[in-house]
Image 1 (spheres, rainbow, N blue to C red):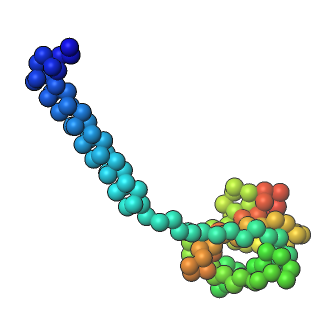
Image 2: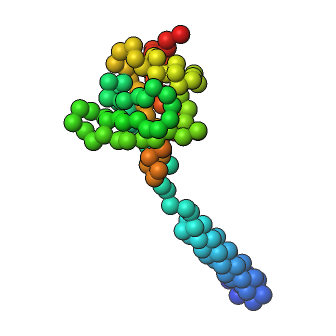
Image 3: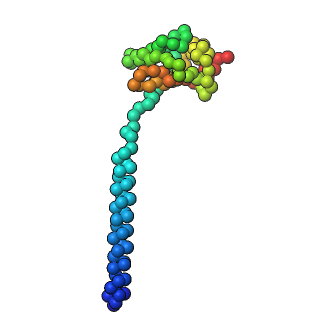
Length: 133
């Protein structure tokens, strides 16, 4: 005969522990479901157009806007500069004039990063081989 039949209180204690464990598991599951449902939906913060310098019309000075296309015949994007736009050659932060000078040395890969909601340039980046000093 089991202890539960000999001692009725032992059976109650065991069933009470199981019941408590079940409630704890249910509470943890409910909290996990609530946390998953409360996450902020993902949205696009920045987009990148990978193209060549022959398909990007860089203005003489940083300001106004530029036109860029991914390929000949593809849609042309008109993107505007702002005070936060950054310019890179490889990983090196450079002034706009240096980027423009390096871009003028021939067709090179350029990455045009922009915020899609405002069509504002966040950064322009030439590949590292474009360094012109």
